[in-house]
Length: 281
Image 1 (cartoon, helix red, strand yellow):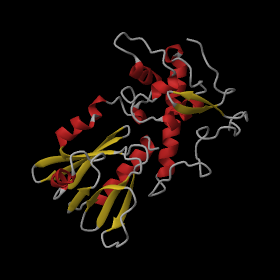
Image 2 (tube, one colour):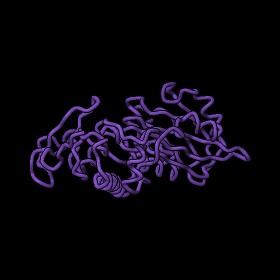
Image 3 (cartoon, helix red, strand yellow):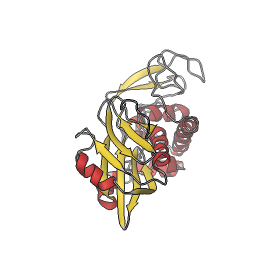
């Protein structure tokens, strides 16, 4: 599923597709993904051109302008969303599960989302940003650079850390934005921290190791995605670039012990019980 690297990649796809060209047509055929309706969606976008963008975690706000109007197009990819870009003279059928489309005089950009969990909003930029929920997200994961900063993300008003398992804590978008099941598992593996370790039990050296683990997993995936225009989700039997995610029973790349799994919050967590020792609260 798309996490911070895939969403950053998608942001680049959108900007390249719409660069320097005013939007000539926009539509949506899905009232769940685009709740405002196709007419309102189109009215907000047609005639506008891209002037910038911002991303926080898994959310993107494309900045557009039309005359003096500051407009915005927000999108979230959900669990299966991705973009398909085609030339305007491409006569092939629309992609299956197309949810919304934005067109210029040269390019057609389509959001494809089989599970219908993606979201998009278009309209006045300030209003769209508030409606998107982006201001309520925690700091972007790639911008948290020190262990002290990372620990601060999880401290409440009392200054105390929660007892929640660290892997689940990393997936709380209100605390730190961009990590999902995959990269949270990879980060704690690189940090040599058991995913079920209580967050409150981590010490300064653990936070330093963890922020390095977050940077390592995100940076590696960002670099790999930079070389491709369309990414492919990890599927059973398909290519898997990760160290532990999706590799139950396979040897740990560090020690060779078989990768194990546990259930955390209804999600499968992959880890190495030899490399990742659990600490007590």
